[in-house]
Amino acid sequence: METSILDQRPLFDVGADIRIAAGAKEIYEAVSDLPRHAEWSTELRGGEWISGTPGEVGSIYRGENFRADDIVEWAPLIRGIWHTKSEVMTTEPNHRFRWRIHSKTGEPQELIWTFEITPDGDECVVAQKFWMGWASPGIHDITKDMAEPEKRRFITEWAAKLENDIQLTLERIKKVLEA
Image (tube, rainbow, N blue to C red; front, side, top):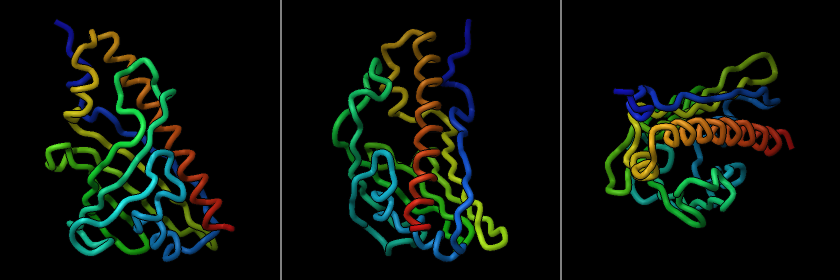
């Protein structure tokens, strides 16, 4: 019997980097401020801190997101407005900021977003990464009625969407911080 792509670990491990003409402190302050992500995110439109102190490990941010109808349009994805809960996992000022997404029922998942900042002369290399260990309940829900070839197609197309989102996000951050 064929092993399902949903059993692959990690399911996603994508990222990109960009050079930004700004200092590590300025970049870190921007990317660790989750409400500011609405300035450059492809889906996040805003939100609020619902527990903890902004930027502190363990704090929870409730984000409001928007997804257009043309994103992997054949798959049964959430469209329009939807919400996420993000928990701050790592705060290493001027170097690394990491958060994970909670499931609909509130449990932390293996959906981890990371920004890493590496100074290089008068600039910094900023990397954004997305890692999903086991397939999330959301991925299982999206693919529950799909045959294995459709699941593979969805994961391939979703990985491409994530890679594109990350590249666009980094370009937008660069534009904001270099303005």
